[in-house]
Image (cartoon, rainbow, N blue to C red; front, side):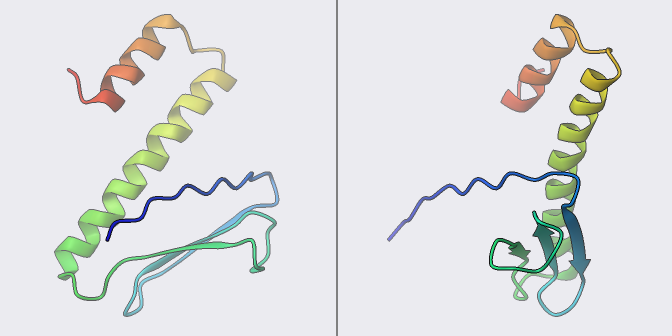
Length: 95
């Protein structure tokens, strides 16, 4: 059986991120700055090898870095149509 769902959390300046590398490596996003029912945890399966766990975390980090880079470019006024097209191609897997 397959399930699909989406959750949207709005984060602001109070948001915190915490990471743990225990048995189940975990990234915790606390949108309101506190570990409350609105927080989100991403855990990496303990059945994966250490290298596989690192690969999962690196993919997560790459997506977050791309997001932050685009937002910084827009904030700094360095965002234009060429950047938007290049970002769309990168996200779509095109060269």
